[in-house]
Image (cartoon, rainbow, N blue to C red; front, side):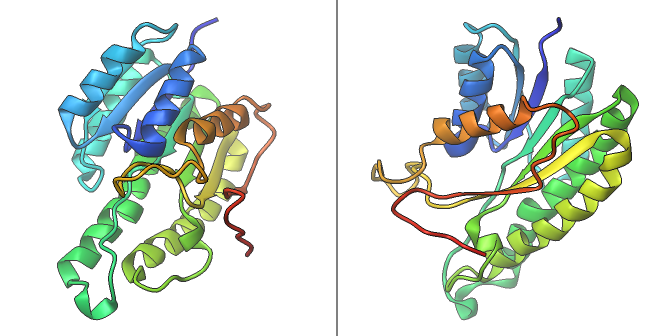
Length: 233
């Protein structure tokens, strides 16, 4: 049996990095995508000790040509794309009067447009190969608004609509589309460890478990929250 292949955007740190590690340890071929080449190339080298192969593809997901190239290189290298995890995301936190138009546009281009570009590129491949799975990583900020997160919330709320529409489009072709809403995660970006938050590798194990479900099983949405938080619709 050939190893399955996953593309992970935002692969250099946090949830993306933890997910790549978990899938590589499970024997998957892992395509790592992020803007910086050094981080993902180092990680790809570290993952090479596991069963599957790893491919690092520097990619700015806000550039549709770069995303097309990412998907094409993945399909050429491994012949099949079983799973796409759209994880790349950015934010410029602060009140709306401090958020520039350029910053708002950048948030939308990365968090929403980037997902659209990747799904658009991978859909024909998955349709031809007879199915596939897409996980769009949102946030609990995509279910309810939060102060200081105008652009971020807007992008993540829109991601839900995109994911739901794609789920209907993909169903006849056995393409599963899920939207995942993580809560507080210990990414290290704040400069301090948060053991009470979701650990990236734990989130990766959840994604692996979900990807391993039968192809006719669809998890439309999932909210992931640490015990220190409570999130409801």
